Image (cartoon, rainbow, N blue to C red; front, side, top):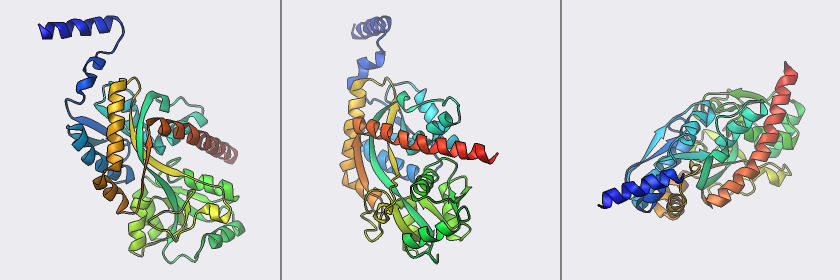
Length: 329
């Protein structure tokens, strides 16, 4: 009888245009959850996603499996989640790379396979500023030394990134525009090769993030000149921000959780509660902060507002890049 009643109610909901998943939202989750990382294994997103998954399982009562679907600066994995069933069982490790890739497509006059409106923001747990790094024996001792020398040879100093318009390319473009400087860009296929290039002195500098950079700084392989953010980083309090030198530039590599749009409200609320609990869990905090990063929680609404704000800055920067590229042809 109960089974027949359940089937009848689901049929009625389908006729009325109500997604049946709402009926079972109170029981969520009843099976394992897939967390899609749209970037390659071993990077910052991967490390933080696995830390989140390990702790989230405790609060969800179900396994959380991280699956890497890399490609096109996050567009491949992002598209797979945007098109997934909005039932809470396929989630995305969101990051600023989503904004970068989407705005790059728009700047080039192309229609992106998804936009941030195809997702419901669950919450973010880190908001990492980029670090301006140079080889450990670089002649530049301070950011002022670096800027002053760069002004004398526009376009000659080279920086690397983990890929075009990605989260290690855009910070330099934003910084250089604010400082009135010009550099030569050497894109790689990931952050790892770029870091190796800086260590090997094949490029002059780069912008990278605390989890991957600070261990190399402690190992006397790299040097940090400045934080491209609004405040100093707790793990390296002696490193100044670019704003302290009068350069109005900020760029943050946030990482968080997103669900497909139209995910039922009860499931969204459950995921938001769990994300907040994970961000406050000491085990998670230790996994994030021991390598030198900081936990910085934004709830779903705050994250959505942040993405709206950052997209305007990134869009303007990428429009300039497209114009510059067209002028060189």
